[in-house]
Amino acid sequence: MWHMKMGHLVLLAVGLVAPFFIYPVFLMKALCFALFAAAFNLLLGYVGLLSFGHAAFFGFGAYVCGHAAKVWGLNPELAILTGTAVGTLMGLVFGWLAIRRQGIYFAMITLALAQMVYFFCVQAPFTHGEDGIQAIPRGFLFGLIDLSSNMTMYYFVLTIFVLGLFSIQRIIHSPFGHVLKAVRENEPRATSLGYKTHRYKLVAFVLSAGISSLAGSMKVLVFQLASLTDVHWHASGEVVLMTLLGGVGTVLGPAALDMQHRLADSLCLDSDRYGTILFLEHSPVFTLGKRGGLENLQVSSEFLASRNIPVIPTDRGGNITFHGPGQLIVYPIIHLTRNHLSVVDLVSKLEDVMIETLKFWNIASERSPVNHGVWVDGKKIGSIGIHVRKSISMHGIALNVNNSLDPFCWINPCGLAGITMTSMKQELNQNTPMDRLIIQMIQVIQTVFQIQLKMPSLSSD
Image (cartoon, rainbow, N blue to C red; front, side, top):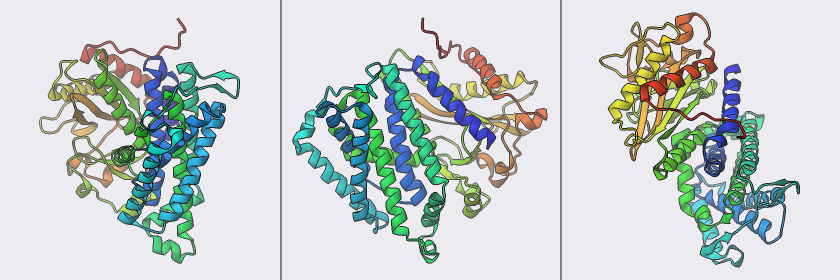
């Protein structure tokens, strides 16, 4: 628990300094879509309901917020509240119509309702059709803080994003959230215990719709534009994809994967940048690679559910592995062609990074001639799993630092039976300061890749 809180604090610190070295508007877009994905995951991951119509709440909330800010002249906080309220009310109506259906029937009803909203937005006078609502003023927050500055707007969006994720976290860990999980796992049994499951599912649907509308309302103020793109079914499909790949049943998984994909898309368009490297820790999770890995899971789903550890598919290479607090995750989102690297070069250099970093702590490690990764006396301490799209890498390495090794006993790590995992803590018989380790790894990355990383600066010069 302590490591999880520290991980959240580290992510918050990264968010605070990020706009000093990454374009703030891009970051705001990523935060808005990440909150949208987290809201959708509240419904899919914790209730088990797959909606194909969440773009209706995201996009229509954006239209209402934009109209309220531009035509009605409301302050940004009131405009956002108006867009969120309308989206929540729409969620109540849609949920009431669809919630008693399950599976593909529920999904198709939500898609049909969302398409009705889309065609309404095409024809309604206040949306201005294909032109959209343009030149939406950001205004003054509470009548005092000018949001026309991208930096000021970014910290406002970051605040809403953090509050939104905190709200979702509180919901899923509340008694209400535990009932939702019971409904997801076995609805007839939950009904037999006296729970009115349809009411619980309806409330969850409304909450998910409301937070989605909040994300759309923020986005419209960031770009000062409300358009048909956000209410189109493509937006629903995108959020489904982000949730499935990022991790159904995790709070930060969809947000983290959404951030990776948007960084990759941004890198594709920006020919002057070579990439971005993310350092983070994950909440407890088992991830599957492209080669699958469920056959290498040695415990039951009930066992994992009792420990609140999800199993999620990803688009990286490799097999099943475990991520958790105290493990250092490094995601190099870099353009291989611009850095004159092949996929083989990237894997080799990432192994070098872990080997050289461990030397700072007098831990002698090496490659295996058979399997990728980094090993200490035949025990695996570092793993690699990457995905390359349009010459841009995603995912990366996982170095066992202070994390528990018990979950690795519940799987065949990376699909390898009979191997033993180790960590820096086990080799040194003490915890390793994560902040110091990250600084050392940054130095190694610069040497191995022969690059100069641009670090965030809080200087006003």
